[in-house]
Length: 399
Ligand SMILES: *[C@@H]1O[C@H](CO)[C@@H](O)[C@H](O)[C@H]1NC(C)=O
Image 1 (cartoon, protein in one colour):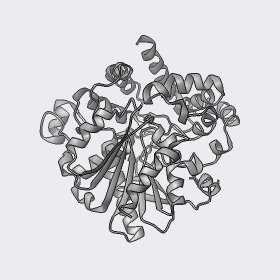
Image 2: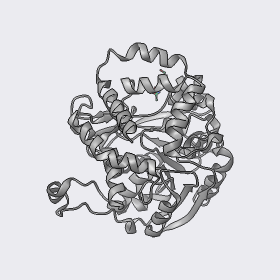
Image 3: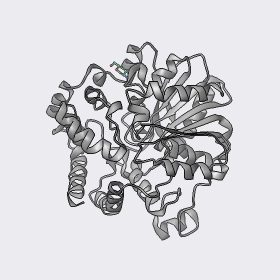
Image 4: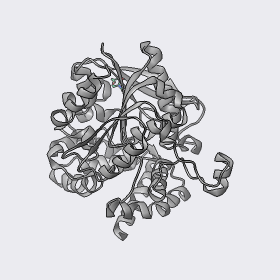
């Protein structure tokens, strides 16, 4: 417990020093040396390498964020992919034909990939400067749903002339979808089917390790706030460079980064996560996000509710006209929803996915995927064999 807290404080400190530019360059060079070819190629280059074209668009949200939206054109229905926390669109293509973004393109779907505010691709705003204005980082999955996803869905519909799209969200990508469609029910009319992979909504009966970290959460987050840390995992920042350096060094890296960090939190499954993949993965992740993202999830853990951000009694009265935050009204989500939960997932637990299923009025498909952890949905080298066929069957019904 103590060492975990110390480790987190060290991480927070390192993240903080990420704003100092000089420390990074040499480390960056060293880190890059150990990456695989696909670890070094960017999104566009990866998509090209695996036989498709990647276009880039800029979407402006109602509150002024400038988001990079990727498009892999195809002649079937449009599918919008929304990523999880600390990710961006990259992980959807880094397994080549074995990654969901490319596999959908191989099946001729018209694939769109959102990059949420705060990620390395969407760290821009019409007025706010992410390096200077704290206000830029004042968001959680709530704003990513209410603004980012809303603007992106409208943009895709406008570009394609379609009336409805298909959408897939992993983890936080599902949280933001539920936030949007419960608060702005008109968006239910714009989506034919939403597929939630390892959705993040309820956090009952969590594993001990998660409980320890979540319980220490308020203190750590308060510390972060005091130190003025709003942005986490800044691209090319000191923390990220350190992670890249440590995590791309072969067997030792596998012990430290995979067995020591990823498996305990996301679920244990070496089958989908081979040693050589580290040199690709850490060329692309983690991607930036705000401290408030973690704070909102920590609140959900304590409240055991899927509710809006808790600003404290005073703040809540101003914001919501009541002393506690309102729950997201899942009963208003009329879109067809499919839910897939991983049996080995230690973050989005199967029993919590079942709670979600009961609260959503329109679940058309619920599936527990065997031998799948939280990250396996997106990162497993085996997902194309045991997971994608199920996804394709489902999408085909709505195509
Ligand atoms: C990837 O790199 C190429 C070449 O530098 C550039 O044209 C392209 O815009 C980059 N793509 C992204 C997503 O940054």
